[in-house]
Image 1 (cartoon, helix red, strand yellow):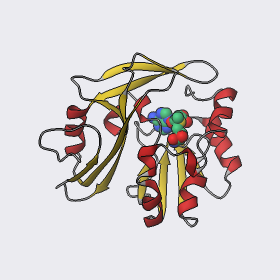
Image 2 (cartoon, protein in one colour; image 1 turned 60 degrees about the horizontal axis):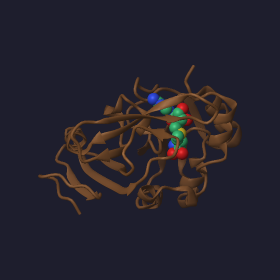
Image 3 (cartoon, helix red, strand yellow; image 1 turned 180 degrees about the vertical axis):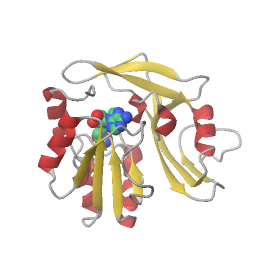
Image 4 (cartoon, protein in one colour; image 1 turned 90 degrees about the vertical axis):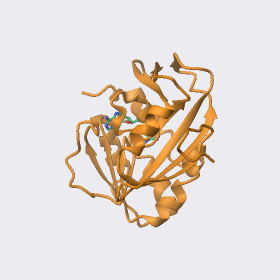
Length: 216
Ligand SMILES: C[S@@+](CC[C@H](N)C(=O)[O-])C[C@H]1O[C@@H](n2cnc3c(N)ncnc32)[C@H](O)[C@@H]1O
């Protein structure tokens, strides 16, 4: 059983993040255009399915598949959105889906909770050195790790993935009040990677820079 099953947690994710106004500033910069250009989406860490309505605001015909660790959240998502597909799975362990199962794979609003962050592109960053590890209290009790990554090291990881294009959108903000062990301000960032031939084109809209990577 995952740590994301309790009634209060399900209630929290049912009442948050289901309207375009709920997008974070980094997401609002790319999600509408990405939604319009895509036919299918795999939304990893979909919680109670709130993003079905957000993505379909921009593309009503989008084929949406959500995956989440939590059985309770996936059952709630299925009841709220019978017109979308949902499955239970752990993205860091591998999902029971074929390669290229969707044109766009999103993992928004949670990968800074995942210590196995080699899979992660929605991240919290600082200029380093070293990753910072804190924690975040969850609604209804319990907590989850909260990570703030060393930007130069994370940029190296991104650059080694063989993507054709790497877009980064970030802004400086304060971690939520439920977070402990973090600086007062960090960079909250989302990365969009396009599969390709391995010669990555970088396009960064981040308040951080790195020698060798063009910063805007
Ligand atoms: C904060 S919610 C994010 C929901 C939504 N994507 C958003 O941005 O509001 C985080 C979700 O990620 C799920 N999750 C955490 N680790 C996961 C993993 N390894 N694989 C799939 N889902 C995971 C949790 O169960 C939880 O529902």
